[in-house]
Length: 450
Figure 1 (cartoon, rainbow, N blue to C red):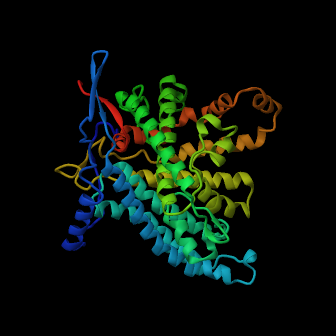
Figure 2: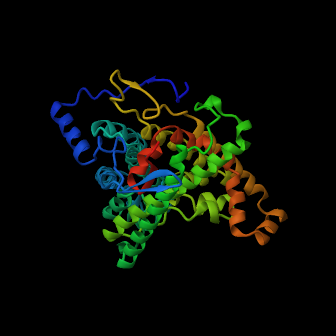
Figure 3: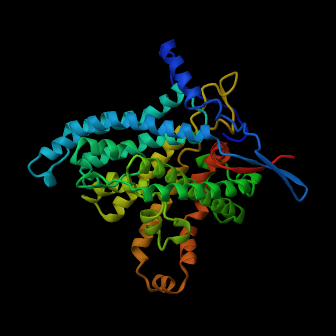
């Protein structure tokens, strides 16, 4: 189906069993605390107007409701994760701790059933019902709603196989704090490491800077509807073509959206870091400028791009597989897991509004069926590249390039290995109004005379 011009009939979860009282509560919370209707479309009015080269423009201020809704999502996720953390600690972590030789402890049938048969499935279904219950329509809010469950699910896998970060399993409180936030908190022997006012100032300052950078960048991309050039490849898995991979229009689109994703993740990371530092917690950074400072594919994916995801994939998938299989097999498993959970997260983010239109049909771009399989294919591509890097990274030509090329040039060469197929990952977000929903949160300049 062509997501651009066909209405798609969607099946919604059966919520009719919910009592009218519960439905009223969900509707009230959705509209008054999560601002579901207010954030369904951009209704901001320019706070400043000006003219440039015969065109009239306006500056839209960030929506406070957007950030309050994101904060509420974090709080709801923390509450949900706290309940699961108690179950996790009681049935998975404590048995391992009580074993006389924890290093030789093997996961019991009970821990496997509780973890993979109860906690992980709950994490998988919770966002769909939460989105429906609270009537959430903004796709970026949906995205964050899914992230909280996602991190808890993989951290459960860490607990099952005994690869939680050091000191996390020292106490129930540590486990609760660890699972409460999407971004990973740091721990020592005394518990969660305490933040300082210097940390608070650093995160707030960087959040404001990246927020403004994001607003300026989106002000440019929105002029092109987030596509510098028309998309030539269809939305479905069967539309994938390597012929389009080297089309310079597609490469330009991919590069512009890759930068946008990097700024997005950096901005949201600083926002969460600022909140948690005010609560007295220190967290790891999420992004370390991977597009412009990576020295290799391993450096890009393992030490710079989305370190939160890297952490739970490494401890929840890579290390358990690595105990029995080769480094390449473990890396492939981690990339496959990344592909699968990105497919799931995409389905949560683009989960159709239950009242998309008067006859219950899902009409793009506000409602859209993703091209499932493309995300997984993208990560399989990168797993293959990592395997090639393992085999040839020691060759003299690569050492020569690292020794003589500037860092930015090396990093762009690294990025170019994934760039031709990046649209397998990004196009579903571009084809919908995901980025239009997101721009509610930052200052943006729009043209008024169109």
